[in-house]
Image (cartoon, rainbow, N blue to C red; front, side):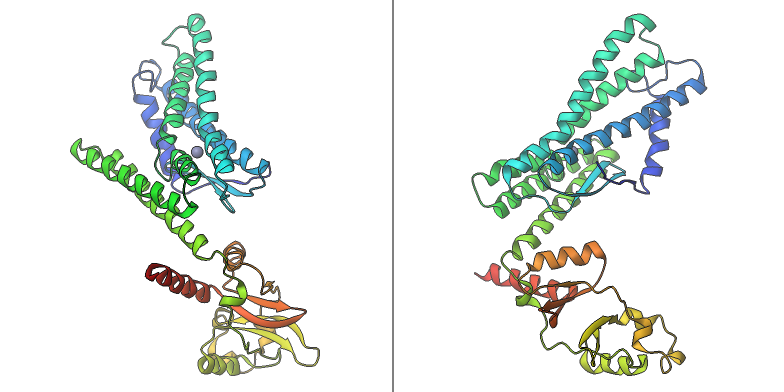
Length: 359
Ligand SMILES: [Zn+2]
C-alpha cells in the first residue's frame, strides 16, 4: 500500500521481554510445558514476532479503509504498546471515521477466528502440549485481547474514535471530541486507581499512556478546530523585509537584532526574484570570524516553500510540520505578500482560544 512501517526504539526493549514471558508462561499464554528450553525460546520468539505481525495487520486494516476514503497514511510505527498509524488528517466525517476505527479491531477479531480454527484443526493431530498447538492457541487468544481492548470506548483506543464518531452525529465535532476525551481520561483514572489497589504496575503504566493519548487527541482537535476558517492572510506578517543575496552574514545578524525577525526571504533586487530563505539557524552554522566574508547566498536555503494568502492556516501548519521548516513565504502572482512562521501560528492559536473562551 506504499506505507512505510517503522520500529520505535521502545520496541527493541519490549520484544525480548515478550520472548521471555512467552517462553516461561504456562499454556495458553506461553510454552513452559515444552521440555526443551531451546524450543521454548524459539517458539517464544516466534510468538512475539507473530504478535507484532498481527499488530501490523490491525494497523493496516485501519490504513486500508483510510486510503480507500482518500486519507493519506504517513507511516505505521510499532512501539511499546502496539502500533500507531499516523494519518495526515483524520477525517471529520463520522461515517468515514466509524469505518476506519472499526477496521482495526475487525482485523484482530478475524485473525482470532482464523488462529482458533487452525488450533482446533491442528490440536487433534499433534496434541495439546505441542508447541505448534500452543502457538496457534496463544495467537488466537491474543488477537481476541487486541480486538476487545481496542474497542474500549476511551481515547486513544479505537473505541474512543467510535464513541466520537457516534457522538458527532448528534453534536458538533469538537464537543464530540471533548466528551470522548473526557471519557478516556475518566477511564484512565479508574484503571490507574484499580492498578494502584491491585499493586499492578503494568495497569498503572497503561492508564498513564491512555491519559496522555486522550489529552493529545483533544489538543490536536482543539488546534484544528481553532484554526477553522482562519486564512493564511489573517495570521501572516505583512511588510516583509527581504535581503539581497550579496549581503554579508554579519550585516544580516545586525538586521536580525534590529528587526527581531528570525527569517528573511533572499531576493535578487535586479530580477525581483526569490532566491531562497535565510534563517537564524543558517547563521549559527557559520563561525563568528567568518561572518564578514560569507554572503547570505552561501548559507541560504534554496528550496523555498510558499503558499497563497487564501490557503487555510491549518494547511500552513501541516505543511511546516511535514516539511520540517519553521516558516513559509506567502506569495501571490509571483510577489511576496507576507511570511508566516510557526511561532506566528502558535501565537494566533493561543489568542483565538482565549477569545473563544471569553465568548
Ligand atoms: Zn486500532
